Length: 238
Image (cartoon, rainbow, N blue to C red; front, side, top):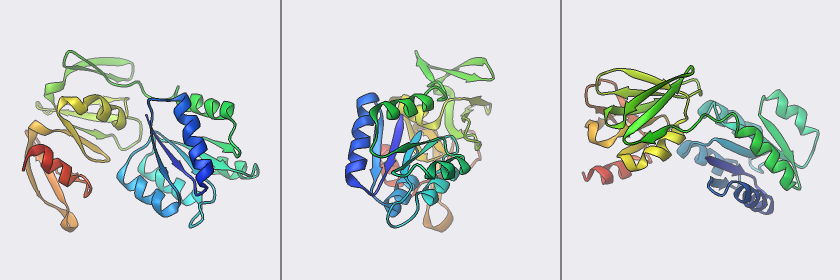
């Protein structure tokens, strides 16, 4: 579970992060103190839940929320504000909830509980096999057969690609796969793609001085995030 707290008021930000960690100690929580920092945060990371202050000093929280919605369609967005009249604006933007300052711990837990039940079940990894769930059907897939995993574009789940060329849709999120498969030789080369390192076939220059790669048995070009190429090279020892 990855959570972002975006608020230009340091005290409010620290207090909200404290309350989240009290309730979800295993969650990864990142923060931004203004709109510019928030934009950078959203460009380099993907989140399951975002708490966004309505007023960020350098820009409106609605602008950040709109970007987050485009980049992470499945993420839950919660507005944070000191003024109850912004609740109407929150629902007009179809965000998932709002909280008022000063933060009430019980209210924070309520909001988190509402976000958690709708979360897709984490992909189970047992004895080198993945349990892939889609449309109430479960397929057991060998981890070693998966070449790469990409988001399905709708924000509802992922597509797993295999050596045989077959594809499998799953309801779990990319973040869940990244967490579960980190020790299985997978690396997230982009917000939308996770690859099994041993199947990388070639890395080459791509659009606007960036790089991309292909995996074995596939001609699909997979872009590499600019902030991820250095770590990828380190892991491949090249």
